[in-house]
Amino acid sequence: MSNKPAVLVTRKLPPAVEARLARDYDPHLNTQDRLYSTDELLTLAQGAQAVLATHTEHLSADVMARLAGTIKVIANFSVGVDHCDLAAAKQHDIIVTNTPDVLADATAELTMLLLLGAARRASEGERLIRARKWDSWSPTFMLGTQFTGKRLGIIGMGRIGQVVAKRARGFGMEIHYHNRSRLDSEREAGAIYHDSLDSLLPQSQFLALHCPNTPDTQNLFNAERIAQLPDDAIVVNSARGNIVDEDALIVALRSGKIRAAGLDVYKDEPFIRPEFAELNNTFLLPHLGSATHETRDAMGFRALDNLDAVFAGREPRDRVA
Ligand code: 8YV
Image (cartoon, rainbow, N blue to C red; front, side, top):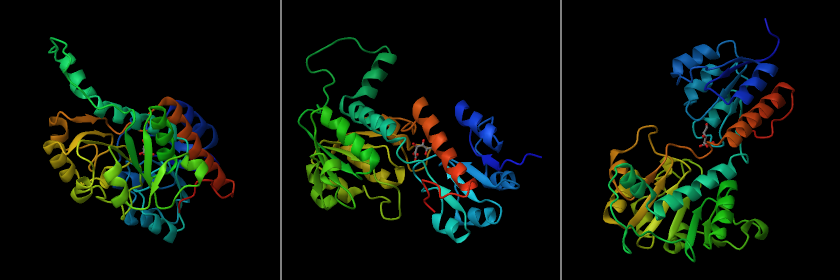
């Protein structure tokens, strides 16, 4: 029997991450990358001291209670921890960690893709070509919305929001933001702070959602908030689907109040409301925010750094519970 700590790894991870796991731990790998049911996960966790989890597992209060006693740490391969009941973890002395910082660049790049894709009608254009239906060019053909000189509103100016602001500034956009607290002037870098959404939304010709999914932010982007946007706004979400009232967004996309939306995340992933795919003014991706080789390796290594700290008796860098 190995004297290395046993770790249940819930999903298939990049090869370099699995190699380090195999070197330092006794991992139970998910070579087929199957989505485990809760019962399966609990069965597989028996005998393990740690779980390396992703946001596809639902680690509820009940699951935490059943992992208690044997599982010392849940090291998440994600920055978002809305899939974990943190209060229950604390109650059962299970340490929970996440992977901040390392996915800010990749997610911000994807936000730029969503903004560009929505503003320049990328899905519509691509579909036309793939359907072999493009037959002529004209001066008024498939016109989109330009970034230059426009105002971008950012809700949630954490690490990802700050990188988006920087990238969007390079496109000549004026940055406005709302955050729980105002940033210092270095991190603000000229962005205009709004202490409420009531103040931010009417300014936001483009809007990017970057706040975490918490009880306070569920359905934050609803019909009332949409009504506060300028007409023809472009909206993107690479944070979490739960922040958006999808019914209200569909109504606004149909009416044209919102000119276009770029979405990477959905309420009920991987199920997607069929209306989103039917609408022409949507640009849709399947939760690819952090999906680059570089970032997925970095996320895995960061999760392992956290595991290493716990098993060495040190405080992990990214403890959230
Ligand atoms: C990850 C994310 O792909 O880290 C997050 O919170 O949403 C994504 O970038 C996913 O969570 C991996 O578990």
